[in-house]
Image (tube, one colour):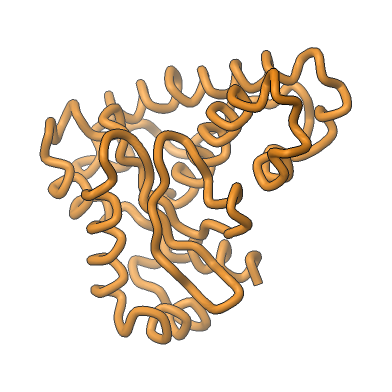
Amino acid sequence: MAYPQELPDLGYDYDALEPHIDARTMEIHHSKHHAAYTANLNAALKSHPGLQDRSVEDLLGNMGDVPEAIRGAVRNNGGGYVNHALFWDLMTPGGADAPSGDLASAIEAAFGSVDELKSRVNTAAITRFGSGWGWVVATDSGLAVRSTANQDSPLMDGQTPILGVDVWEHAYYLRYQNRRPDYLNAWWSTVNWDVVAANFAAAG
């Protein structure tokens, strides 16, 4: 990675996902929370030049290579960094509002339908106690749904996330308060399935 890591631009305005995700939530989430993960990751790696030329994804997939003194910081902040970078991309305005092609075939094979995929992701995300994420991951045997706590990434378990939804309260509380299911139902309207398809192809 290019050290120090930089906070990625959204590529769209904070209000671009209205009414599903409000502008103030997006602004705070990106400019405060994601910025903090970025800064803290850089701080953890500052005195470890041997790790600075490795991608964050590589570090998360090989946590045993990270010195114990900074392992927790890299796990939390590196996870927060890559999880959010994926999250913003998934919600890029425009693009396909439904899967097609190879992605659609893989979803059909794994879940039977897109609606069933959404239902399973929602269940995984709703039942995640406390803070965390709901995911669709690519595995050797096809697509699967899972959830992780805090900022843990499926990369830590050798799985490639192609879609993820943030269920930390800061992702939704200003608009939805404690109604996590309402947030999740609205969130699907922001998903750009072209991006999910590209992630699936890259996971190949």
